[in-house]
Amino acid sequence: MQCNIDAVGKAVRLKLGILAVTVGGLISIGFLIFDFNFGIEWIVPLGLIGGGAFSMFEGWAGWCVVRAIGIKTPH
Image (cartoon, rainbow, N blue to C red; front, side, top):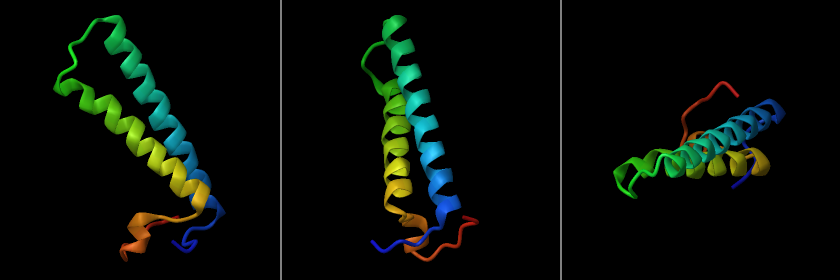
């Protein structure tokens, strides 16, 4: 896990991660307020929160999994 993104890439991943975790949290709160069942629809907020947390980790660590497998990204 060597650093493979620059400062701009780190900032982008961190900001996107924070946004995804926030949106996932808001959707979860909405589900709880409107009393949704604990069924398949919970994949959406849990996926956003999990993906956002991983994106924040990438920004913090300076490591991008997509770049690590050889795909070129802009940042």
